[in-house]
Amino acid sequence: MIYDIRHKTRVDYAAPVRLARFNLRLRPAPWPTQTVSDFRLAVAPVPWSMEEEAGPFLVNRSRLFIREPLDALEVESSFRVEVHAPDPELALAKTPSVAEISARAAAHRDLSALGPASYIYPSSMTPLSPEIVGWAGPILAGARSVMDAGLALMHAIHDEFTYDGSATTAETPPLDAFRARHGVCQDFAHVMIVAARGHGLPAAYVSGYLRTLPPPGQPRLVGADATHAWAALWCGDTLGWVGFDPTNAMLASTDHVFTAMGRDYADVAPMDGVFHGGGGQTVAVSVDVAPVTEPVG
Image 1 (tube, rainbow, N blue to C red):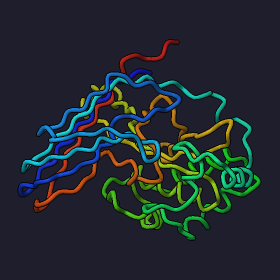
Image 2: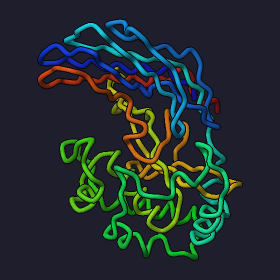
Image 3: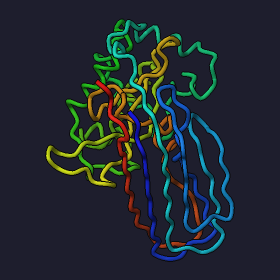
Image 4: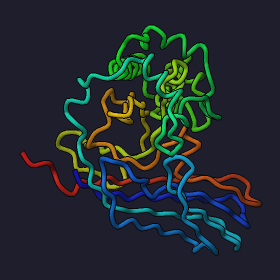
């Protein structure tokens, strides 16, 4: 699949802010199953300075500094991406057991952004939770293959949890969403990550986009799509990282566009920053994931 992605964000401040510094994580980082071209980033007002840098983790970050007072900020990113399907036999692949992957990850020497070592331990938004780890114990039994375990955990979250856009916020702890059994894609990914890491499996948070289809007979609406999140599990050196989408109970495939990978949402948030002044803000986000070509056959 080939998509044209357009992501618009407008922030209106109740009072002018000044000396604003923002981090944007909108340019997709390199990922084996996709190719990105024609990336463009527009910011209004024009920043006094803007620096592009990689990392930490698998992230491309734009760092902006705006010196003049502003009462609104507009950010728009766009790019074209070609997404290739993973191996159709992936779900059936013979992989090491959960216990074997845990042991291999603990002894692994790769400290790069794709190495498993950075994704074994708790992080600020995904702390260790005995309650979640205990719930996942029967699902992630040590003798089970890591692919089977990942699929079972993904389906358990999908079946037991209810998608509810009003139940949580971006700051909601995974344990709160777990106990409520309500949340959004961010919550489901965080719960899966906490569960996996609690059993020694390297688990990462993936930020990106999801192709959505309109109801039958209805036109596709520009701006109706949204950012999306899923979890990735390290399945050994041969298979590497595999994306599991508990919101939709499916492996990440050609409907998923990868942007960044980190330990949790805080590492890959599309936009954050600090500034002086202000008295509250409202944020409006519009995302468009437009297919350019359909698969042949």
